[in-house]
Length: 216
Image 1 (cartoon, one colour):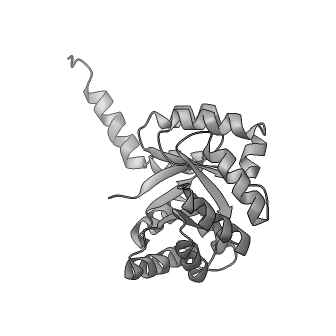
Image 2 (tube, rainbow, N blue to C red):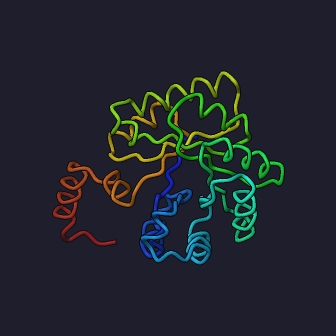
Image 3 (cartoon, rainbow, N blue to C red):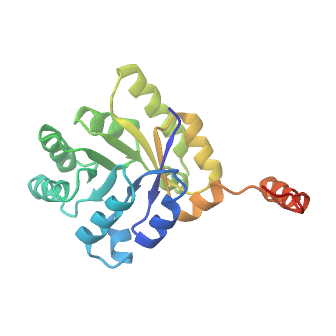
């Protein structure tokens, strides 16, 4: 299967427009994105779930396992496609295990190492989200991390999917694709850029010029 594309956004109008392409398989959100788009978490998540028929990540805002589990159960009741997004901390992994036992899908976020990804898989995470862009900002190789996690997961036959997060360029998108990511979550800007190429534009212009007088 080819790598899936998720949109990292909570802009309902923008998601509606871009989803028409048929390329978007899911959506990821976080508290910062929700705040930017009005802050009504439940309303925004439900609206997104009605637009995109795929995993919709909704992040908890608690830091302790007990409250994370409670918030996760609340969010999971909003729509069947909700994936509860949890931080890669001891409490986050404890909540992940508890939610898995309840049949609730999870996305472990803020992953920056193979050992964290392995721990998330052991805790039963449905998705694990290594932050490619933030690693690159810190002078480390985000794409290499994706490749290393892929190697470990394949060896262990892990069912946890690798979601490359914070992918900030088309070049990095290609990199994580080749490194074996199951999913990449990208901004609307990168989504538009990945569908653009100067030779496509030139070719289209030529075709339009040569189509004058042709009818169907």
